[in-house]
Amino acid sequence: MHKKYLLIFFGTLLFGFHLNAQDGFRFKNESDRRESVSFKLINNLIILPVEINGKELSFILDTGVNKTIIFNLTENDSIGLANTEKILLRGLGGGDAVEAILSRNNKFKIKDLISYNEAIYVILKDFFDLSSKMGTTIHGIIGYNLLRNFIVKINYKTKRIHFYNPNKYKLKKCRRCEILPMQFYVKKPYIDVEVQLDTIGNKLTKVKMLIDSGGSDAIWLFENSKKNIKTPKLFFNDILGEGLSGTIYGNRSRIPKLKIGKFEIEAPTVSFLDSISTKNARSLKERNGSIGGNILKRFKVWLDYRNNKIMLKKNASFKDDFNYNMSGLDVVYSGKQLVREKTLKNNVDAYNQSAERNNTISFVTNYTYKFKPSYKIKTVVPNSPASKAGLKENDVILKINGKSSYSFTLNEIFNKFQEKENKKMKITVKRNGEVITYEFRLRKRI
Image (tube, rainbow, N blue to C red; front, side, top):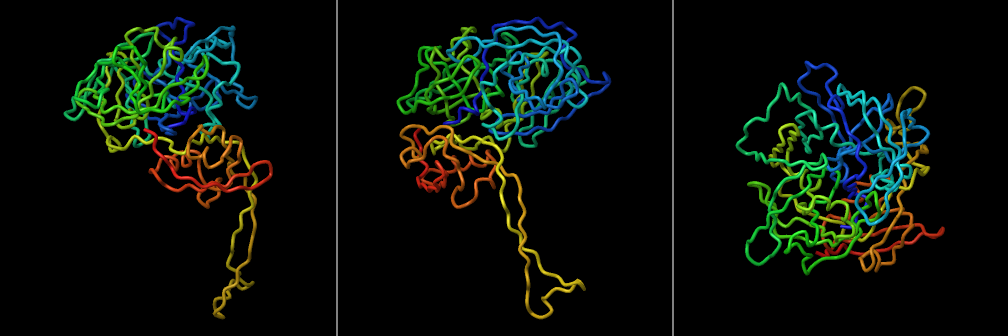
């Protein structure tokens, strides 16, 4: 699965800013019992509308971060930041800390959930370019300070989040649910689960995992965080994502089983990360990895931060296969293109009588011009099917299996590369003004 744009893990932010007890989101009216918010689900990531100082922006809901971070602001997205100072942030990746601005006392609003004293960390350089990698504008990430004052129910199937007043709502007993204790470290939630690492025998290893809705992968495991956590024999090396401190590398593979309470998940994909990429994330020595969106989306999820509990109930996606990109192509959105579309209209005379009365049909051809999305290849994985076929980075994609690329969303293109092994792919691209068509078949590597 070569989708580095899907796996944005920000890791532990080493700069600390104390939040007062009165900070954080509240219901606009304290008597309210619930607020319901619709979200977009793109590549297993939850995208929420968040209003900051009167300006609506789009944020990823990320349980794996303890700060609200903005990394994509343009002149059109001015939110009037005040009380600012420069700081340094550090996260996953092997590089240096990055410059950011800390702004205090900002007003946040999500429908009737309001916070009047929010701190925002604005990264001065957009390292992630998530908007092009997800095909929609993404301004930042939000996590702990939104979730901590509510009981939160996430329904991945209906794409709705319910925020409940914890003074008026309690988790209900559910025979088909599993309630697990959460532990918090630097305001991030962890749970204990079990993984089967060896195909021989049924031995399970207990691991402590970050609950990370801001990562689209299924599981990350930190190599050597326990003696038997090592990359299996069948794997391929890949770029897994971009962190605040640089590129995150690891080995893609599978394990036989993940066990969360009574729920057993068969053959999930797993990424094994080395100690360099995860140096900052290993500040909690007991941590062994992360559970991401490709696991969480298989459940209804209740988060009760006040009482340190998570409740899970499997949904219709529970037994879905763990697919990944079998093409080797990393495709990104590359702006708008003007496209001429032809329409045929039935010719009607001045008396509104169609030519059909004379047993003939007459059509008038009209052309309209519309702006449509354009896509290009950012990276081609070496020795992948696409690489062997001859596709190259910066190729502009014109057609996929005979259909114009602009008729797809970026998410639909991702899904095409995951459909089934041996599926024939026919990609037409423009390279240096020349139109070329390549063919290859999707191939599994793990």
